[in-house]
Amino acid sequence: MKVLLKIWRQDDRDAAGKLVDYPLDDVDPDMSFLDMLDMLNEQLVRRGERVIEFDNDCREGICGTCGMVINGRPHGPLTATTTCQLHMRTFNDGDTIVIEPFRASSFPLIRDLKVDRSALDRIIQSGAFISTHIGTAPEANSILIAKDAADAAFDAATCIGCGACVAVCKNASAALFTGAKVTHLSNLPQGKIEAQRRVVDMVATMDKEGFGSCTNTEACEAICPQEISTDYIARMNWEYNAAKVRQTGKSS
Image 1 (cartoon, rainbow, N blue to C red):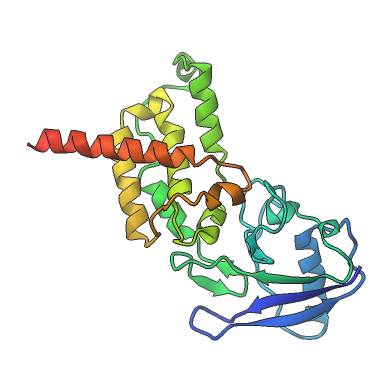
Image 2 (cartoon, rainbow, N blue to C red):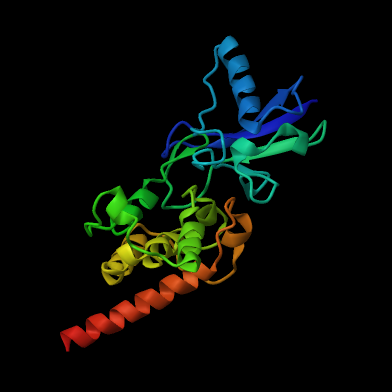
């Protein structure tokens, strides 16, 4: 199959960027989207041109590093699918495919399709941990956890932190990501001791990093490759308000 790729090229954050056309022939329909980009880069190398830079790691839909905007949609046209799990059979022979980086002020562009998503790491570092000693593995298993709580914690923990929720949000909000990280640990007994400090610190870091506010469009849930529920945003808001009330009570 033949496709016409329109790919965003930009040398660095301060350089001017533009879409560049790359006609590509002999694309195998069963080729993954990233394999197709690898094929293009091999051609660019042979022509002595700079390759197209994009992030990728596991290529198994686990890490979400491969996030990019394909035809206006983070991770492309399929629901619950990361870019690395997208295959060229999704497109038609002769299609034009526009490929751009995630766009958000908190995700500064590095080059071409690569953006710096370390702001999400700093949100995690500010609170998504537990410092409570729970013993060795056998001792930890002695802490009984109800199945519904374990299931809820696991569902929240499936957030892979790809940043698609930020890229699709008109406000570039990280509320879905932060809500999932807050909910994951607050559902577990090991995480309850630090729950108040966690939610306050993570929301403060989210704001400090420049992410926008959530206005409940739920575009984040629709685009999330792990189908993380916006219920976690409501849970985060409830926990945050409860923590601030308790802090106010202690200080008065």
